[in-house]
Every structure is written in structure tokens, then in C-alpha cells.
Length: 412
Ligand SMILES: [Mg+2]
Image (cartoon, rainbow, N blue to C red; front, side, top):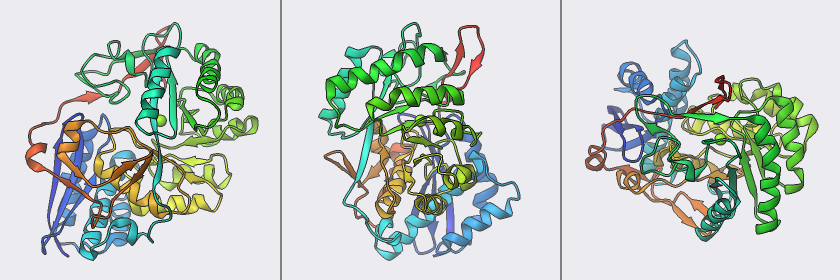
């Protein structure tokens, strides 16, 4: 189990993905997801120039020791680039350990705590009729929980609305499916928090009237509100019984959530841009959130996210792992194995990759009746088809950003 080869593979089937492939001297291979949306090549350089040389000759069985070595020996700790690189190594080592043991990774993590993972999809529309169509499409696909995003009167293009793709730079991909647009510069969108706060409660009232009280509904505020605005929204949405309100304020200031919490019983989820347990420490200890949104890919791997979620479990805080299309099928598989094994699983975001991505990454997970399962292949259960991957070279792409009506850059 000595690592004698480490390849960093960049492929862009429906979007850019960065994958680390480790090969041991006895021929086992492991995959890790190192995709950092819009900044992919920074992680490629970090891995190729600084991490791969340290891995050759290392013992692939030493997962914890390798994590600690890569985290502590760099001296410069944390940050999305560093932690995505460490995450990729960690996932690949769990994949190898599973293959060596002949077991799926969830078995190595303690075995299944449930039969499947409740997953939520993204419904959106510029207006209520198109939003209702989108909710119905998701119900027909089997989703049992749905995120609701709506267009706002007076705004041309905002985050997460599928049918606004023509405003958001065109292209063949659905906008809600792939917001990162290929091109030399990010697409500019517009924003008005007052219009949003006025409009959104009516959208949830209409969705509850149309689809009833039972289906879990979620909403993403995408870091756009001040704490007092977020508190007002949480209060206004209480009658509609949300599963969670996500990213209601910018996430850097953990203290902001205290003010929101004082004013609303709407459950709160945050942390998709976080990269270590330290970003969550106060939020968890002070019980200011209900769900941890960290992704295996951005939180330093299975090893680090499991520790964060075990800490969260002491406070009855659950997982809600980030799962947009920029989490590769390898990162999604890692999330599913971890989610199946831990006690405090909450819900899994599931956007579904495009057909080209599914050809590049051969997967063994299942999706039945609104529930995900990672499957029982040894390791993570994902293999990379290098011939298919080679057909799609890297293409520069950026997430959009937005400006207020007076031209001020606003949180995206
Ligand atoms: Mg989000």
C-alpha cells in the first residue's frame, strides 16, 4: 500500500472538475474530488507543485497521519485551496482503504445508520406558474424535499432561477443546473434586498396553498442579507414551516447568526463556503444553527468533516451537505458514504449531473423514491473513464456576481 503514482486530472464535461487519482504499488487506485468552482486551477497547482511530491512513497493506509501531515506541515493553515487539496488526498485514501478491505467506505465509518439518504432538489421559476411547473417536475422525479427559489419583480437575473438563462450569459446548460458560465469574465446579475424581502413570503404562501403542508421546503438566501434583514425574513417565513433557511447572512461573521436566532424559529443552515471546523466552532457550541452545510470536498475530506459533524451531534445539529453540480461525482459519493454512516444525518443536496459528466465518472450510487444510497462497491464506488475525460479540456468559467441598482457590488 505504498503510493507510487499521483495524477491530477482536469476535465470539463458539463463543467470543470479536478480529480486526484492515487495508485499504489499493489495496483489499487483511489479518487478524490478537488474541484473549487471558478478557481479550479489554483488547486491543481497546489496539488501538482506541492502535495504530489510528498505523496510518492508514502503509506496509503495512514489516512489520519497523512491528513495531519498535510495540514500542519504546510504552516499556512486553512483556506479553500489548501483544504480542497487535502480533501482530495483524504477521499482517495479512503477509496483505497475500502478497496483493500473489500468494503464500501460507509462500512469502514461504522456501517449504515439508515436505509437511504433524504435528498432535496432545486425548483425555481421567474414567476409562480413557472415555479409550480418546476416543483411538479421535481415531484415527478421522486424528490421528497424541494428548495424554492423565485424571480423577483423588477430584477432581471438573480441566483438560481432556471429560466433566466438567457439573461445569465446563454449557453445550453440550465442555469439552476450550472450557474458557472464559461467565458472570460463573470456574468453580472442584479439585486435589491428590499424587493426580495417584500416578495418572497408571498411566494411561500402560494407554494403551500398549491402543494399542501407536508412537503419539506427549503430556501437559500445566498449570503445577501444583513443580520436584521435575515431576522425579518426568518420571522416572515415561519407560517410556511421551512425545513431550513440557508446562508441568510454572509458566513464570515459567526456572531451575525446570534441576532438572527434571537428573532426566529425558522431553522438555519450555513457553511457551504467554510473549510474547517473552526469556521463552525462558535455556531455549533452556541447552537446558532440547525444544519452544517459543509461539503466533504471543501472541508478537508471525510476525516475532517466527520469530526465536525460528530461535534455538531453533541448539540443535536445535523448534516446538510452541499451538493451542487460543482461537487464532482467523487465528492458526492464521499458525502453519501459519510451521510449513511453518521447518526446526525439531516438531508443531502442533490442537483444531478449532466449526461457527459455521468460518462466521465462511472458511478454505482442509486436514486430511488427520493432517497440516495452510495451502493456497495468496495471504496467510494466511482471510477474515472480517462478516455472520456480526455475529450473535455479545461474551459475558463466563472460564477456570476451581482450589483445593486446604483452599481455597488453586492454579496453573491
Ligand atoms: Mg447555498
